[in-house]
Image (cartoon, rainbow, N blue to C red; front, side, top):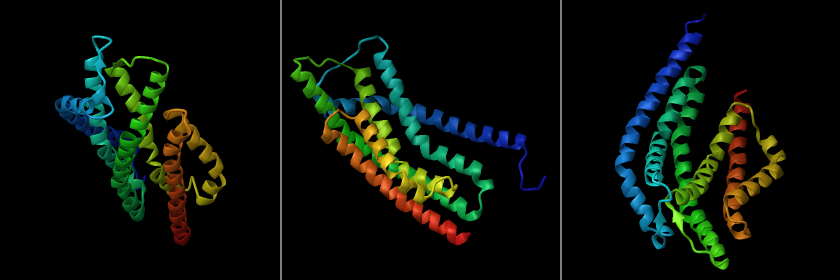
Length: 241
């Protein structure tokens, strides 16, 4: 075995060490989440669209369940960049120096794209979706009675998928760097990608054209940006080869 190679036991030990660091960070962030969860929930209650409605608890566990979910999601978001760093540190020995630097640069960009996706979904998509569903209920002469669990489940089902979809450019760049994708393949499958994005937009928004387009158009733009970035990575690989 060469000096720079690691045995299976060494790999398992490295994974164990990285997981311990990630779990410790999540535990600390979870404790911080317990402290700030209540003010954050009160903030959500005080702003649109929740400011005009009354939250209800339909089971004795609803308040505690939402409180725990808020604390966990906060810890997940806070420790996300740290988790990516440890993944990079684990893969670092198998990468050459340029690849190490390129992979490390992905971490802040990933956090920034997630924040942009979260802001877009919360400030634009979620209010429009909530307004549409409330208007539809009103047209059927239904009285809106919201449980706190149902409200946040509805919100998270919109926010999280869109926030993760905003990571598409980095994922495609990474897969291109691994030579699993290339710009020619992305262009060839463009129509299928558009169809998939329209389908995803339809699933996470109300079934009206405006809401679907509000989500689908940014996703299509992100795909086209991904094609350009993939071409950039692919051209650098071809030059190096």
